[in-house]
Structure formats: structure tokens, C-alpha cells
Image 1 (cartoon, rainbow, N blue to C red):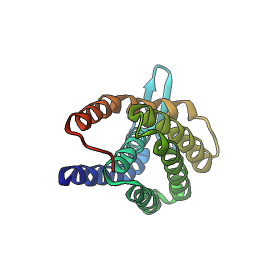
Image 2 (cartoon, rainbow, N blue to C red):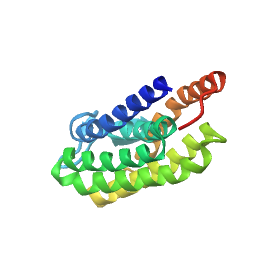
Image 3 (cartoon, helix red, strand yellow):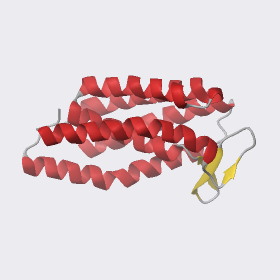
Length: 184
């Protein structure tokens, strides 16, 4: 039980850290930085996205793991803390977009993940992440740049992070079953 809580707190720390890192990446990391716009990274042949997508895709999965280890109250607290952190660390031009997109996408993720996770963990993570990443992408791009120009790239980039996390989620589920660990 203590190890389960420790893992939960580590997921929480990773979740919260992913927010300022994503905001920093948007303005500083990429193969090309648009003047007065985001820094872009390739996410598929001929498709680019603002670089923060990589961390936000990971954040969606980490929020699910926070809930699995620490429970719904901690997950909701993490969403609120994440939105506040996002508002404080985002570049001033992106504060509203970042905080609003984060809050709405994580609440949608929570709403989809919660009823599914006890029966079908991997399905819950994939379904909730897809809903969250689409909402996050649409809201962020529209509020930040007044355009959905990078929507496909945002969705693909965040999707890659979810896909990369699935083997880890599978391992967690199998480990929990072997040890008889129940979700929080």
C-alpha cells in the first residue's frame, strides 16, 4: 500500500512537471519556430505540431495513473493544480489558452477514464486520452493562435505519447493483478 502511494505521488509530480515543460517547449524547442508563434516539431511525414504536444500527451496518461494510485479526489486536485501551474508558467500570450485547454481536456479525460478504468484499464487510458487530446488541441490552438491550422499535428503528436505509454500501462495492470493490488 505504501509503495502504491509512493508511485501515485511520483505520477503526480510528473504530471505537474509536464505542464511547465510543455509551456516552455512551445516557445523554445523545435525544428522550426514560427515568428510570433510556436516552435514546431515533426510528428509524422509532412505534419508538424507545437512541441508542447509531446508533454501534454504524456500528462493525459499521468493523470490517469494519479487517479489509479491515489484516487478521484487526488486526480481532481491534480487537474486544478495543473491548470493553476499552467496559468502561472505559460507565456503571457498563452495563459488563458493553456489553462483553459488544460482544465477542459483533463476534466474530459477524468469523465471518460473513471467509469472504464476498473474493468478495462488500457481501454480507459486510450479512450480518455483521445478525448482529452482532441479537446486540448482544439481549445488551445483556437484560443492561443485563433486557428486550428496545427490540429492534425497536435492530435498525432499527443497520440504518439499515448501509444508509447501503453506498454507501461499494460505492465502496470499485469503487475497489479499478480500482486492483488486494487486501484485507489
